[in-house]
Image (tube, rainbow, N blue to C red; front, top):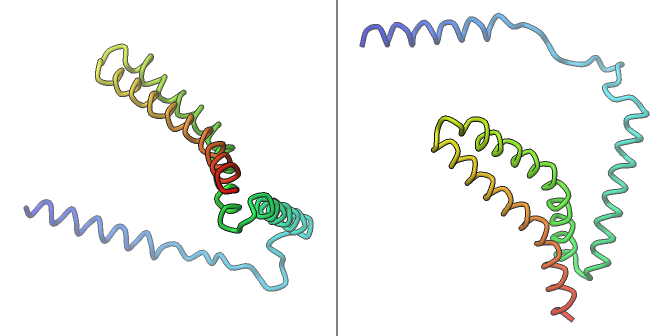
Length: 139
């Protein structure tokens, strides 16, 4: 018990020493620009493009709520593709490489792959189902 208390006290003292040893000030002088004008114009263009895209969804679905949901579902659909491929690759490593020696690791990889493929299918089909329900049954 005494050793544990000594280790905790040493750890706390080391942490405090490290925190107080850093004396860098990460402030920017007033006369220096953080972002260049070219980068600012690119950010403004991206923001205007996304605002126009959201407005198009508002007009397409006839409601701000439905347009926002459709916009978010479209972004989920687009970004789920690379994330699911990455998940499939990781689960394949678990199943086929690490699972050679351990059966539970192989099962973990297989179950993870089934889960990721299911999530992928849901993310790809959900915007279509939403559009069919809102466009078809709402009118």
